[in-house]
Image (spheres, rainbow, N blue to C red):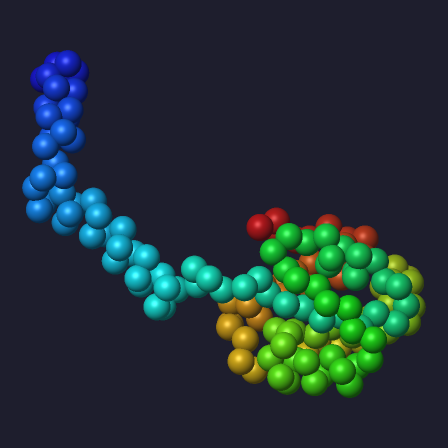
Length: 149
């Protein structure tokens, strides 16, 4: 069939389509069903993951975390306040960086990394925050990640 005839038939169908109930079934109804399912079960309106950080030593991890798109970073002054916010589900996760964290990483030591996760946060949110945190720590250490995602 020639392209001219195909365009003629397509133009006729588009012109007469809105008068037919099949038009609703084919074009409009799938869009409405998709929107309803995303609102009811999906993550159409989910907020960005929220990470609280207690930084006792001015770590480069904090600055790098604030630069990451798609994650809300909240700086908290005390560990107790951070734990309360994570338990109250105000934050999805909390990270505590000890004083001298960056220098310990770069010298080859393994400093303690305290990472608190909220019980009511989504599993996908937990995974995003955990992987992002590990990636940021690896960057502060100066190592390249084993894989790039």
